[in-house]
Length: 337
Image (cartoon, rainbow, N blue to C red; front, top):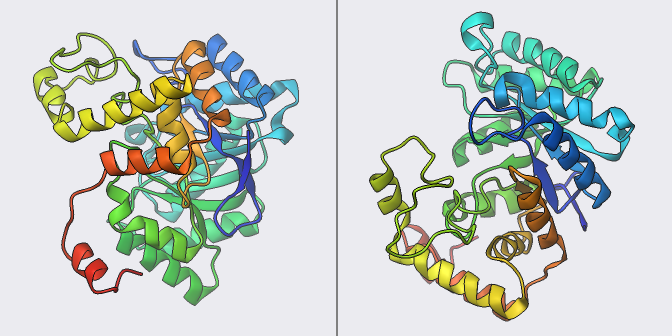
């Protein structure tokens, strides 16, 4: 496992992070507590040092399970990331949003559930249209000054909202975002239109979630075979509609390219997909969201797979985004910064 600098901060994180959204979930796609604890221990044993969760995951159970896993003394070996915006039980405790009240209450609850006195990386989990962003930023700055949070990050903001936040932080001397958590994969490269250059120019490390394209890059799906089980079949959406949305010519072209490289390298489809993300310049760490120990063992092996320049080019071409205005015009006239 390699360690990479998180944005322009002094924090180094392993290039594969452990995502824990399924820990303790009350559903068929849950990772049971015992297996989740084994996964945390295996992750640390493999040299991983960054664990990602959120106050809303499994109603707070994910944070509690992580705390149990780290009772073996490994807390100092890892950095913990959690989030605030969607309350664990907002109907009961007004725990949603990014108001000062919500942030101050939810950080205390996350600290208790995680069994720690400091959160290494605290995210705004999404934009709050009902709270001035300056209020949220001031609250986050206070948390860092009080020693309850070390670094802050952003997720699910529009590009202008991230930039506005950075501008306000500069203006008022607040701590600034050093990490950004966004969906990013060979299947979903949408952030490259706006966010890639934003992150690079502002010193923000990207921490991609959904690296396997919503399950499409697991190697399970075949052309003309609508799935009857797996993540796509279990989304709760209309299966035919969900399948048609994913089974596009572009996505099958990506799958073909990934499968070819996987076969040539003796790797799996998920490992190649994760290795492509690890190689992206804006990416500090890729969040793997394995549900089982078998999936974890496969995913963690991607840390040892370094793709060649030629292989990366093949994948880039297969997954290229459609040209859009004004980005194509800017590129043609040399205005693409």
